[in-house]
Amino acid sequence: MFEGFTRGRFDTGGLEIAYVVGGRGPPVLLLHGYPQTHAMWARIAPILAERYTVVAADLRGYGESSKPACLPDRSNYSFRFMAGDQLALMRGLGFDRFHLIGHDRGGRTGHRLALDHPQAVGSLAVLDIVPTLAMLTGMNRLVSAAYWHWSFLAQSEPFPETLIGRDPDYFFEFCLVGWGKIALSEFDPAQLQAYRTAWRNPAAIHGSCSDYRAALTVDLAHDTADADRKIACPALVFWGTKGLMHELFDMEEEWRKICLRPQFATLPGGHFFPDQFPEETAARLMTFLDGAA
Image (cartoon, rainbow, N blue to C red; front, side, top):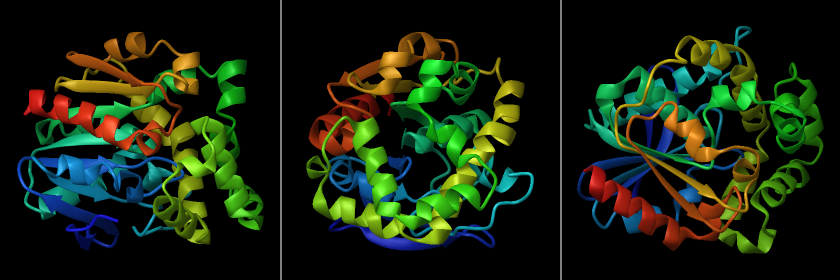
């Protein structure tokens, strides 16, 4: 995967962020979601790299990035800290301003980065999410049943880590199939193996649980405080029409509340539509980037 890209690890000051970089042109940062790694971009990044310098990175707690123990106040797994990691990475690579594309947790990290450091984000694309505050305040019985993992993973350690660790492949593959509305056979074998290798690491299980612990505590506090702030840069909201987000939320309405310049796009897939339709996803992202550049 990522033929022609360079692999690296960037020290942000006590924590390393793993990444790949390739291509030429304006910089674009790609961030993955749960329970994946930067490998989710393996068939999309080379297409974008035809006109852009593409960086695909692992979030802290995931993939090959550092996986610190979660602090008692959960702050070191907040989207604010995750956004700071990625900002440090891009600055370290020489990019003070860049486009940002994030799926799932990567999209939430991108949302926070655009709020905290608007001068750094030229455009923002969020894939198959509603804003975190809308997600948490809209947690009715239907949302809770569909997104049961938000509450489960947020339980105190080591409860979810212990249960997941008994059979991580079963747990995480259940997530892929359930949210993706697709069979495992529809995932690229090399990408799926990269996900398995990553999620079998107990430290990664802890890191991903800590991500959700932060979401229900410190992230909720941050987003509540920033409820009236708007994303000023061009923003693309992109989702799968067979996904749970589309079924449970009015995607356009939720993002129009906080984006000054929103655009919208869909593909006929579930939550993991970038894995299912990489060429089509890349084409729509390229159109957005070209218009925002």
